[in-house]
Image (cartoon, rainbow, N blue to C red; front, side, top):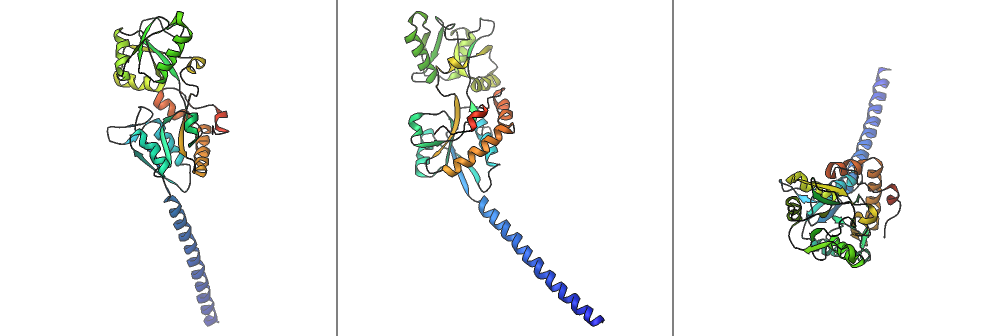
Length: 288
């Protein structure tokens, strides 16, 4: 009897061993499969400017709102690994065309002509603009209130173009526009000194400059109907090559989750000091 019990015990051990070995092989195969999926690398390219949307920090790391949102999106996408490279602005599109890059990230607004060549993701940011004046002066809250007052802008820049269009349509309420190729901070310092009456800048850049320079200036938000004089489309998007529809769908799904779980609101408050997450209906259908 003891002899039979011993034989049975050995047989059971053999069966369990085979079963355990088979299970182990299955788990190992699953891990290997998962690992191979994670090795699919998606390369995103950026020009590394403007701050705080995207920039290189003191540690030579690329960061900013656009970058943090993209990283958060890829944390929700299985089977892909994100790699981010900095290059000059023009090379972002060259690389997308050649297949070197799969995503372009540079606070891109929608452009109908560009939309013919590239896919746009769901928006991840809504751009807002402000009138900047010296503290203690009467705030400016509209183009009409800016009539007769002095400002400056770069030729061909959207804000400058908007002022030119206003002046053309309202010659009796024209804004005193001076052209310059100087950096934005120079214009803000001229507002602080009183050399200029006002400047127009987007909310995020205003906060970034104030955090760094703490100028004696104040900002008043431009109403959306007047902001559309500056840009028809007030949202920022990631751009992808035309053959990356599956990747766009995954990025879109992730961005929709980031909107729903409050991540976009949290990150925009961190970088801009206010909630700039797009409205819910912007996550229902892509723009192209």
